[in-house]
Amino acid sequence: MNRQDSMAQPHPAEPASRPALRRELRFTETASVSVGVMAPTLAMSVTGVAAAGALGRAAPLAFVVAALGVGLVAYGFVRLAGEFSHAGSVYAFVGNTLGPRPGFLAGWALLGTYLVFPPVSIMGVAVFGRAFLSAAGLAADAGWYPLALAAWLVIWLLAARGVRPTTRSVLAFEVVSVCLILVLMGAIFWRLAAGTAPGGQGWSGTVFVLPPGAGLSALTLAATSGFLAFAGFESAGSLGEESLVPRRMIPRAIIAAVAFGAVFYVACIVAQTLGFGTSAEGVSAFRHSQAPLGELAQRYVGAPLAALLDLGAVLSALGAGLGGVTVAARMMFAFGRDGLASRRLAGVSAATGVPRRALAAEMLAGLVLLTAFRLAGTPALNVFFYLATIGTLALLVMYVLTNVAAARHLRRRSPAQLLPPVAGVLIAGFVLYHNVWPVPPAPYRYFPYLVLGWLLAGLALTVVTSGFAEKAGGGLERAAAARPY
Image (cartoon, rainbow, N blue to C red):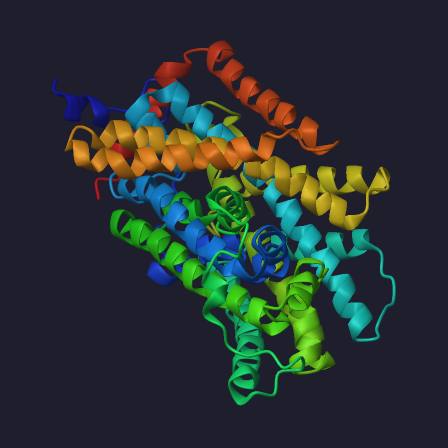
């Protein structure tokens, strides 16, 4: 019996007919998940200040460098997504190149990220929802937990409708929120060109020139904040069994998400930097701003747009949460189908095509996290940044593993193709290192140990799970045989 024949045979521990997702997504719907999880409006509401704090008026330069770095990291994902299509995304990307155990560990790291990223997004809804209610005069000091519960319920209801309604909802949320920022950017650029900016600011090319005293190390460190604004670009990989032509659509979706992020982020940070001004006073105002988009909207347009931008951030956060639970549910589905977790997680709704038990597990995990922080009396912004930090650390580990896998896979073709994934390993590794050293203040200093504990738990599962290599390896082979395009 040849290899192809053996791959086609059902595994003795598996039913002949395995649970299947519906293949129905077109390119735009596939790409919307990557863009949605990146949450460009939410990212631009919180990340520009850190870059301005490190580089001053040259904050946009940090995002240019970040976009180049993310492009190198994304290269490995693009190449592997062109070879393998699987609901477990990196579980298959790494598993088919480095082996079942590294593949499971990569998937486990991704699952760790997407257990906490949806609650991060929900907290974004709560934070900006409170700001919107206050700006609109509807509630001066709304509690964050009721808003978070409402967002949690909306995300579950939308995710349970089916993957096409889910992706279309993500796309709609992001289109509306991005358009609101484009209105602000247009107003800023118009008034700069007309010479009617509130502080007399004008156009300046110095936003792409390092200020005196800022060297390459400062630029590199500032770029790490921009790098994290792209987190989630790989999410389309989880739709490998639901996209119509995944080995073409998913690589293009990842490229489109990174390219869109690069253009949008750089243009938006340029608008923010010039909007505040490139003088010492303007740079200080930007780096100390708690809500830069809202402040600029007040200055350049008026209070109504500032309130609408808060609402846009709410929509962006909802889209990110919706994309995040989609990714996590597919990973749990893949693990359950291969017998690496409860097989109940592999159940697919006949009506909607959604892995409903996996989705329920993801949503309940998020509810537990949100409720625990509420009982502890943790402020909303702290919950947002605590969980975002934990999820980002796990994500960076997965980026490193995936690019190692891409390097291993591509070296068989030509040595030149090794360069981008090797660079991706170094870049993701550097960003990971920068997030743990110098040792951050408490409680952030403890989060790397929490992530390490999660990864060690995943490694332990590969040892204690009976017949792990046979289950994982057989599952990956059957998925490859069943998805030959």
